[in-house]
Image (cartoon, rainbow, N blue to C red):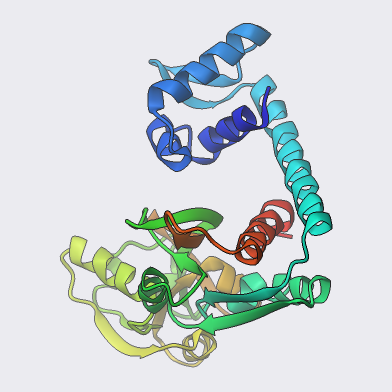
Length: 299
């Protein structure tokens, strides 16, 4: 199996066995992707996927083992190609990378020092703004790369998922909502909310969910500082809505964390503008970040 085919297989699995979504991610047609899967299974006389009514619904035992092996192969391939580039060119230059401050310490506190220590010739400029503002700056080509929190594909941007997690509700253990195991949007209708301000993409996603539920939320306070919001939850009978990794990073043991029903997904992606030829140093930093999350996250 070629590296390209391994990448196709991984894309199918990591897009929830949705061939349509995987084909869009890979920029190939869905029939071509289906044919590749079928031809490989036939040639190797193995079934990698479980099927129901003609649809892929999961992995067989052989498929699960192949998935683990394929991830290791892709990791080694990425490292091999990075080492080749390091030997054949001097990685040097400025890279403008936008990261929302809400996720900077939780997701990048290890990666950034590691990158700067290993590559002192890279001048990494970190631009800290909410994902909503970073998206506008990226599309205006004021940034080379940006880490965005998006619910779906954004026109004009190429996106590579780094983290897939959930947005959750945070309350004090004595809060009435803490008695349940999950929370619905209707249950938050009369609750005073402390959430990130409108420079953050999550702010707009939260309001959109309330609109869909036909609820006029009680916004008690907004801020660009997630640690301030956590502090308010600890001291007041208010409700905050934050990404679960942020609360895990904060080690907020005195806070009750409740998932939404149905779950509210939280995808973090590394993005750049489509159809732009980037300098080698920008391409290198992009690959370095993708390799880091693929290899080390969530450890």
